Amino acid sequence: HGLLSDRFGRKTILNITIPLFLLSTLGCISAKNIEFFILCRFFQAISASACIVVGRSLLSDVFEPLKAQRSFAILVPLVSLSPALAPSIGGVLSIYFPWQSSFIFVLIFGILISLFVFLYLPETKSPEKRTTNLNVTTILNTFYLMLTDFKLLYYIVLIFFSTAVWWVYAAGAPLMFHKMGYSPAIIGLLYLPAVIPYIITSLIARNMLKSKS
Image (tube, rainbow, N blue to C red; front, side, top):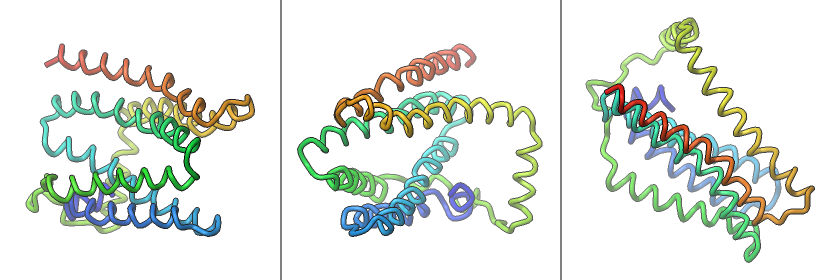
């Protein structure tokens, strides 16, 4: 998504991936077997990930480096809130409605986001700033430069392990809490405390960036 948005523009990629996400969500709602459901979930993930990648690229396009860092310090806890709020919402919906209700909620939310993107989001990657060469050699050379930059790798490793801890918890906690006898609604609420450290440290980082300006 990052390479394609560098070449064709940020909004162009969103205009393709968001409708794909909506169609995939409709597929999940109407799925009659687990195989088709998993296939739709796969395309949901591929298309939804564009919003994460392109969304962060937008900040880099619009703001100078220091302001972009401050913006990321706000964005990170908000992104971290989504996997915490989602189980809470899904847990409540599961009490009163069938399992498809979670996907209907996601579909409605996706439609609102798509309207905002189509109507109000400007293109932040102007044609003169776009990448013109996307051949395999250039891409591999770029990744080689990144993977041999030890300062960059240091920061990547920090992000990798902190994120890995969160997603291991996000994936495994429901099974653990279910065996402990908690209801889906309570399980969803138990995600919220895990996000608090992300929010606190992000706010601290933002204040530290202010002191360096």
